[in-house]
Length: 370
Image (cartoon, rainbow, N blue to C red; front, side, top):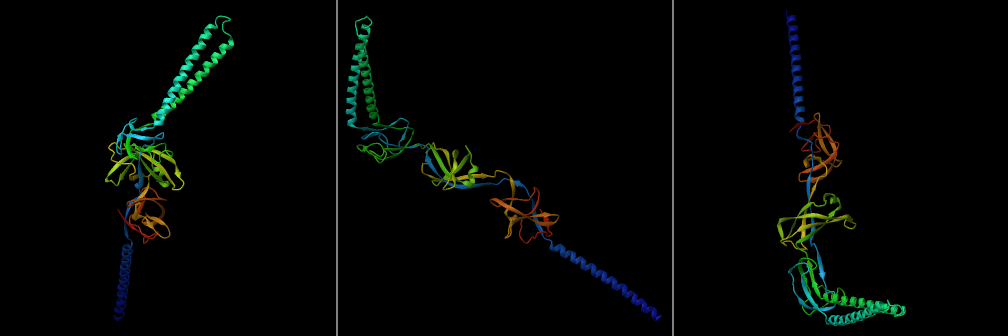
């Protein structure tokens, strides 16, 4: 009886030990699973999409008169009278100043006398030849030699008349040069002489022009576009700009002339834009700050900057595939605000971690949320 009791006790103890060991193992496995679950971090993700980034570039430019000319006296003379001054608005053909040159008047009188004398000689020789020609119709009255001499005399006098006419016209033109007229409508931006001053052609009678005339209601805006951005401008594009005189106001210019070649020193292309300035608010010589819009030529993948990891080894984004992180090497493009273009082995709709860093190892298990 005692032997049976001992055996029963050992059997029950064994059963309880096995049960305890099984429970303990199940508890450990459950804790291990919970530990692994806790070690898988959760990351916010987004679906990769294509977009076009629009950025802007600020460049310095210069406003210039659409037309500008220095007006000189065409002949050596003295200023007789000035009809306009600095700031005067003039029209095409308007008289700006008159000059006087007494020697031109004397030359004109002499040329006029020589012209009248040549006219009289030609009239006389012509009449003589015509009389001889009419008389020669009667046989034997006029010898052919006399007729030839009369014709030659008429031709010589006619040549002298043409020479006198040309000389007279030349001096008349010189006298007309004593008037300075506006070649186009604009504003007198400089006056360098006063009445009585001696003036003449540039480099001869005067070092400075009598007037400088500018067309200011129509301006040119010149800018040098760096080589990297030359493809963003085309004919008739509208561009906004501002000047220091009006810091809170934007003006509009239209692209009209592109050089079509790069300056070999600056590696830039000269572009000229037309600016309508009817109010004359803008002035030639002003420095402009041009706002050049740079739209993307083609759509590409655009992500937040936080999704790009710039590691020492490479630059990458982290794509989530089947619950695991995968580093995808990319090449960054243009940056605008908090966005950046990326190029790499990517597809539209890929799941990308928004806040990426090197701690998310390649191949690591991750949990995601949107």
